Image (cartoon, rainbow, N blue to C red; front, side):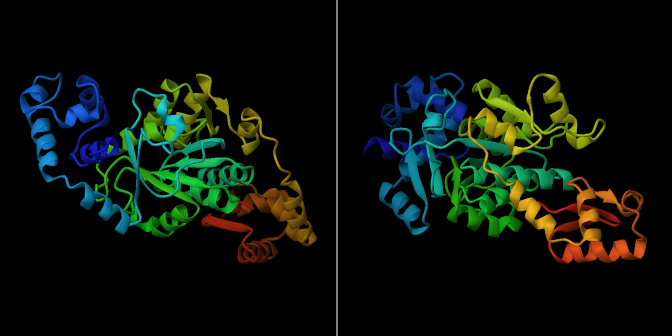
Length: 363
């Protein structure tokens, strides 16, 4: 077998975490030697259990490299190892790097800047809009968006990236042939077309709880900057931040209202020195990318509105506002204001995230 075949074999060992795999490979001076190690030698290794050894030996007995590659090809899945030229350069330098990756679509371009966008699954309308808006503008400026395709912030970040036109990549906590969450089936297919689905877990792997904290090191590892859009004080997103800090990456956080549970984690990050994220411009400046002018798009859209429509639209932002407050700010009577808001919704410029509350849709 060739060296990549040995990595293919070890990828089939069930439930082996990267920390243990790292110890195994280093403990015997390489993947090929690991394959040829005896049961006795494996049992004498530090922190390796009898159950681990049984799984390794079972995988060696059952592994058929031809069947392995045939199954991947049949399902349009690619396999890359750290010994291959196409393996992402950003991951090579870390001691906790994955030794192999499965992917559908493509891998990130090593020569382009990348930003990881993470945040709450149960996010607010404010978080959804900001995630989509920032990701879209970063994408329009040639920045690749890395995320996890989870519900909430991940989903809206990757939707924005697709709209922006640059590639986006989802690092998943299951096999790349499994759509999780299932409601993201359309997003999954779009990401494959406009980027890639990536995992260190072999096809068929279920989305187990321990997979997600482990995959977060790949999300941060592939990025130049990690942006946290909304996160509670105790959030899975902060695990990604911990990995990013260990990897020497810059962290940016979206400010939120004091006392808002969904912004507790972000506000704490800002207190300890994270960069303040108010728009894509903050990150583009950090990456030394000259921002393309989007103001003309917004201005031209506003110019299309009649006077009353324009007055209402100007008062709306990404944070939802109550209709009674809009009446006070615009001086427009309730019936007329309701007509305007309805028309703006039909035109796709305004949304109603909850009863009697309105916000702009990201342009």
